[in-house]
Image 1 (spheres, rainbow, N blue to C red):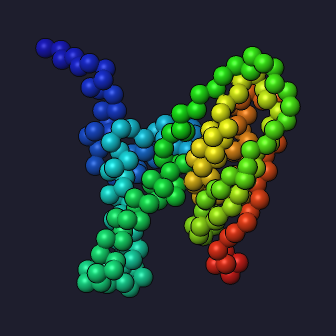
Image 2 (image 1 turned 120 degrees about the vertical axis):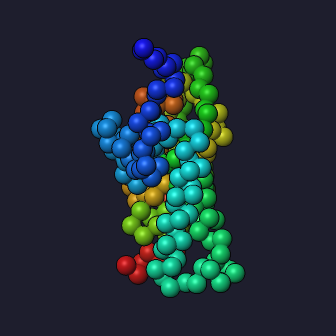
Length: 207
């Protein structure tokens, strides 16, 4: 007798029967697609619904191991008993959310008025992390564009900038990624993005 299943049931069947960690499953998907997954790449297309919560638990376990390797008594020190869970949630949903979450919804409109004057938006406060040491970077950026075939609301520039910068970065690459995203959203004929670093924790200067 031949058994048949709906396509939805057999989709990702290999993922369902494997004993791999969720990070390994996601990594395998990315590798099989031939896609890069560097520190400042967005990988949300490869994370299925519900998997981010599982990944959060896995990361928390790894952070707990890190604390133990640093000889911190996570079992008896009341200050660090839930640190691993907090750090995991912070990385996946805040500091590095630009890697694991989709781009915020941004509606663009046709440039029916043929606006052609260059305008700037800023300063936009941004927070990122140094990809070399994962220490916080706080800064401000300005976005200057000549309207293209599409326009977006001014507030949307800040949302996209926050999404792009919320990943491990070096500032030169962060600016290029932001420029590419703005170019796609606005279908630009001319673009300029400026990023000014206004503060970086002094720890980065010690390495």
